[in-house]
Length: 524
Image 1 (cartoon, one colour):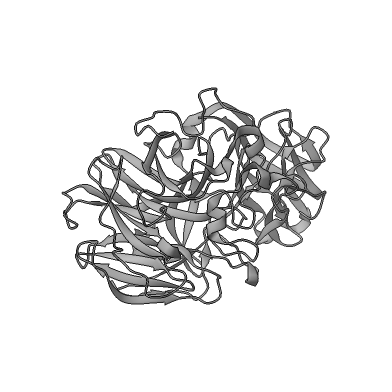
Image 2 (cartoon, one colour):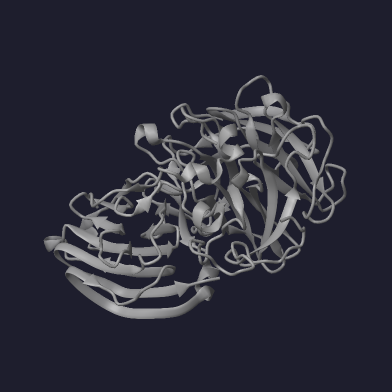
């Protein structure tokens, strides 16, 4: 993905195995706030059951390595989710395959094995791309064939190749050895995202090309014609583009263009950036110059969105879902799960996205996907809890969903309100999530626990409102903090020890009420 001064994307794809773990984890104190096509195991659960650091309710690769999610497609009542997988990662092997999982509720995923083996042909391994169901038989492989447009890089020259499946996405074959979109002579030319442009009756592709997104059209998924581009020179190397139309809560329809971007040089996130705007089949004109961000944390990269389908199979234009890789290319091999469980690769929770009108235009509001509530093993309704100073809860858990409304008096506001989660018995290790009203900003601070790089993410807040809805998802290797209506989310990769299962509430220099405090212990 993002090029590094120390290591290229290709070297990162190769995998470094457990040797990369030594000496890389960060612990800082305090600080400001298989291969069978129809395997049927629950993804992330081994035959021996859950192990030491596997997430309890997030997707994790069965073994070795995963990175980029691929946009799920809806086939026969199920969502088919593919991702890049390296079965030789722990031995230092190179290359990625496409591995498949299926889900009906976006929480429980069943592993279905490898759909495209790596190094299947002379064009090298398969990188990111996308899938479409060719209902109209435009490509000639039959109505309903599943077509994958995939980046491969023979001799290091990135281009887009067509693969096809006639068994409903279980296995794929190459649609010839030549690229359907050849490289015009640029170093970065990858991650195609294809949609059916119903208004014009043709296929449309967005392709990542360094600091621009190239736009192409096709009648048959084989012959592509360039029609435009979208250029940004201030967000690093653009990857994994995304384009779709949604209906907002007020009934208006809008186009959204998304990219995986790196805005760290400007003090911005390095996650999924997006713009609402106008699309005419060849160009995209954004409503605003600066991007909005689907996540403000450190670990929501390579994200993809996909439509929701009703019982009849029709798309719901008011609801879309998103899934993102729980890692980043600054520290891809940095996880103790290599030593404890022999794997490296988790996703953040699938989100429900809705387009909402607000100050400054329309934005995507995120919530953990609705079916997550069905996986509550035990629910603790603690009611309204008023805190002045600190309060330690009796509950002990490594995997849960915490929600409440933070309420304070704006005329006598505390300086800082929030939670210490993943808290060690003695309190030294923890992750802090809350609202620093003297800032004023919301934050997640992972410095006080074991983590890849330390650091704290922050987003502005208006303390004069006196209230803030919050929701925190905690799992064995992640903390996700949803703020307000979900316009702001902070997703972080963390590595608490097995005994770091405490929760502390705090309100510094004043008091606050944690209204309707509810904690649901979760497991798939």
